[in-house]
Amino acid sequence: MRIKVALRNLIISQLIIILFLVFAYVTWFPYSFSTLGGFTKTALMLVFVDLVLGPLLVFIVFKEGKKYLKFDINVLLGIQIIAFAFGAYSLFLKHPAYAVFTGDRFTLTNVSEIYPYQPWHKDFSRLFLSSPMLVIAKLPDDEQQKSNLILDIVLNQQPDIDKRPQFYHAFAAHIDTIFSKSLSVENVFSDEIAKQKLQQFLKQNNGKVADYAFFPLRGNDKKDVIWAFNRKTTLPVDIIESDPWLIQELQQKTQQPLAIN
Image (tube, rainbow, N blue to C red; front, side):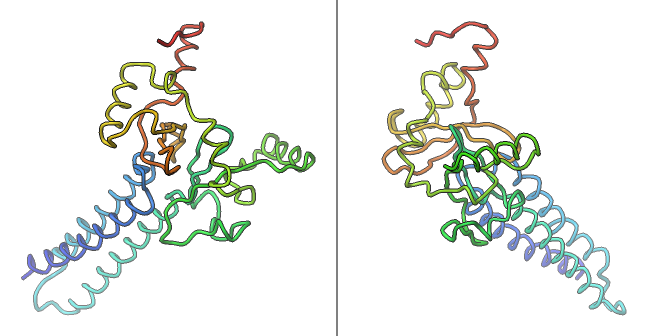
């Protein structure tokens, strides 16, 4: 009977955890954002607490005919629910609410870095069940405001504009400007490893190089990768785990201009 109760707890917990993690992976961490930090460790914590610790404690505590057995089981279930809620909320805080374009790159801005549910503009409000929103952050047009903002960022070490929703603008309205700043394919895929990753991406998506625009993307773990957009739909496709600053690094190593064939 003890094994039966523990297995029942394990199956139910497993079903709940799997459904939640599938939702988080698809909705909160699309485009392989899960590889950029914030997902794996929290997911493993959820699995350990709710799939291992919970059923194990039930197995240890359960003894048929034991006095206050129902109370003990309810306490353990309560602990599991609290642990699950804590893990789910932690994952919620770590997921990107916005993918912000600034200058020449995208940055993932997590829920924990800003409070995206009270944005400057209602068009940029985010719901609990929302995927990351594409936006562009721009400096104010007023020169005095721009100077004050830069001083605030540089001298007072305040968050940059990619963490400030009041400077967000609609992505679609600036798509031509954004795409004009895409990476040079010849530069960013200049070495053999990068070329192989590009070919793998093209094969998976059944496309050609000319079909895509490529941008630097900084993830939650400060890891920089390449983010590919479909030029026709102007929508993101997937990330390529390759260094977007490859050409600059090679030039620094050789201390001379690098010829690209």
